[in-house]
Amino acid sequence: MRFDQNYKVKKFCEDVILDIIRELRTLRPKLIPNPIWLKLKRLFKYNLVPGALTYNQDGLATRHNCSFINNTRFSHAYAQGKATGSWGVPIFIGVLM
Image (cartoon, rainbow, N blue to C red; front, side, top):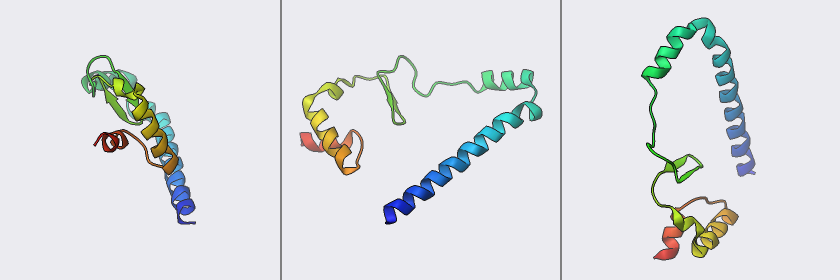
């Protein structure tokens, strides 16, 4: 029961945030003229991870070797973690130890 309540609260918050973002996108042209907006975008443009990405999912991006994803031990550990509601790479580290 508690899981359902937490999920509903989280979903509600996500919906509210998305509505705010949509509203800000429609207001931006009225508040900041396009020429100024384009200059600001160029000024603050940056790459969080420079170079070609080898992995970019679930909020994690890297340009380093991540060939372990194709490893059968990792796939098995990942499937077990997914079945329990856990996600990600830390499962693999525990399997290797």
